[in-house]
Length: 113
Length: 116
Image 1 (cartoon, each protein chain N blue to C red):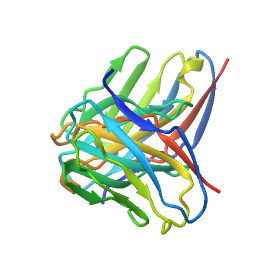
Image 2 (cartoon, each protein chain N blue to C red; image 1 turned 120 degrees about the vertical axis):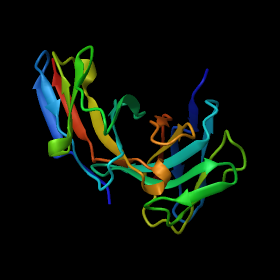
Image 3 (cartoon, one colour; image 1 turned 90 degrees about the vertical axis):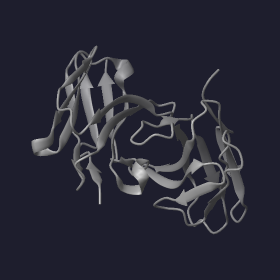
Image 4 (cartoon, rainbow over the protein chains, first blue to last red; image 1 turned 60 degrees about the vertical axis):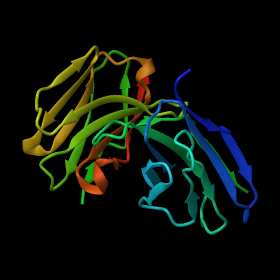
């Protein structure tokens, strides 16, 4: 099936631990994105990548890190420096051309205990 | 800087009623695109429509219709004869030439509840 896979759907971690959220796509899209969603806050962009081995910070990059070693994969690491990491995290992709719609994965709900 | 405002936080309607979700945007660019997404309780955002700034024609897709008015910087979404399956959070979004034309700016969403 073509699509975007995020795993796991629910993730629990202890405070102070780093955690990596996976995002894989087989849509052959060049651009990939990570968003954070909090209740009543809409979606806020964490990082995005337009091509392999390149990525840019979004609006709330502090406390997060990413890598883009393969076109299909864009993992997000939530580090211990992120003050309030409990949230719903959404990965998205889009074709390389400008102004395109983004396609979203099912999301990972991270809870830090 | 670009901004999207969805003033309605939550709306409740009875099934079969029509409902309009408002979206007002701000941008300094003349070239931009507007989007609507649906987020059902499962969490995954579903793309509904993309409209560019040079096309002000209204669009209809089944029970869904969109009204784009540049004069008021609005891109409103109407659901006709609402159904329980329409219950979701709906997001309006904008992309302009900033950030290489890749970055979507989202409104905070409107939660629609359709009551049987």
